[in-house]
Image 1: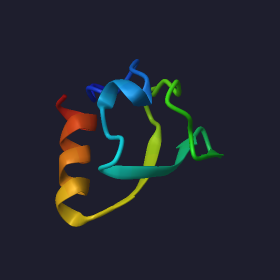
Image 2: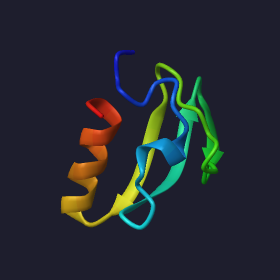
Image 3: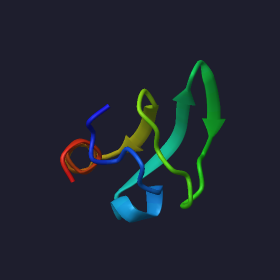
Image 4: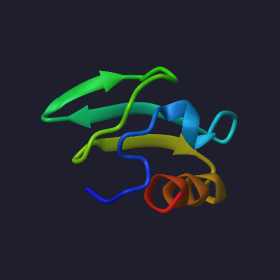
Amino acid sequence: DRAHAVGKALAALELEGKVEVTGVRRKGARSQRPGPDWVFEPGDVVVLLGRPENLALAEHRFLDG
């Protein structure tokens, strides 16, 4: 609920070219490949694809900014 990404659009996290967001699960439903304007909500579960070092960077941006 206190993650940096909550209330922000995917594009604002600047992950383009680093990791691929392959899906987001929200309230039991899964969205396929959310677009850059997707806004994250508390409880969203994000599925990422990428190299380990880029996944670590993405996790940091999602949680801490």
